[in-house]
Image: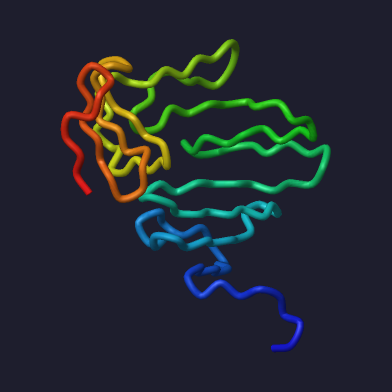
Length: 146
């Protein structure tokens, strides 16, 4: 179609008549539907389903079931913080704090162009040079893999 805009072949967009089960949403899929006159968008990324509800300005979104719904009163305040995998804390009101759990078991990849891992600056594994890994002791590369 001419002038139809950018088309992402890896993105799946669907519009449903009713709320689908989270189990039926595929990875990378975005699902939209109308619920009680409001537009709701569900998106699955990295196994987590994210929900966004769009309501008319000045109206409040309410929940009659067990789902967490954010009150969108037209202001930019955050009304709820939910701790995901590897985080502790969160809540629905008041002063909220999120902390990173000591045991991170759900992280599967770390990518950085200048990553250094070590006890201190003197003892480290340095990934800072492309296609090379330096094992440093006393801040000197004792072993280089390339």
